[in-house]
Length: 166
Image 1: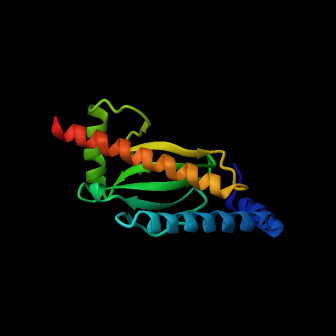
Image 2: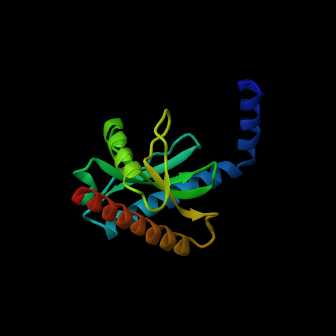
Image 3: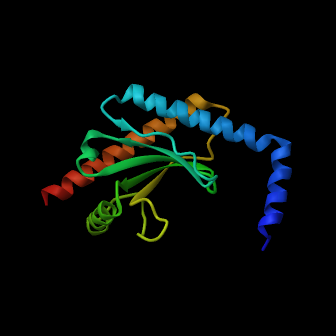
């Protein structure tokens, strides 16, 4: 295992090349443009600010009106390690997160990954929006993310509505 000093030397070496900064700025600019697109196309949704992260995840949340009263949100996440865009259903606090995790777990959830609650787990369910994103074709990438996030929101809304009628 490398020491922090060795890691810092390597970080400095990589930063001198300049590629990391350029790619990071491009990614965050893209995420801000995506955030602005959701604000303009879905005015009834609440849209949070962009969380830059620590090169682990960057995200912003979209909160459809039907999720707001439940204390739920959908995070549009760029997962650096997996290098993909994901959607995460999350609660606004740990109590809500646990409550809806139980609903999902007990309700025969039809698709997507159910996460197990624990330290550092910030989602109830997750789905991939865009694996191996092509940043050379941002229009196509944006359309794919938007289509998949709307499908994810619709699936979650239907599931929760069905569970509430039981």
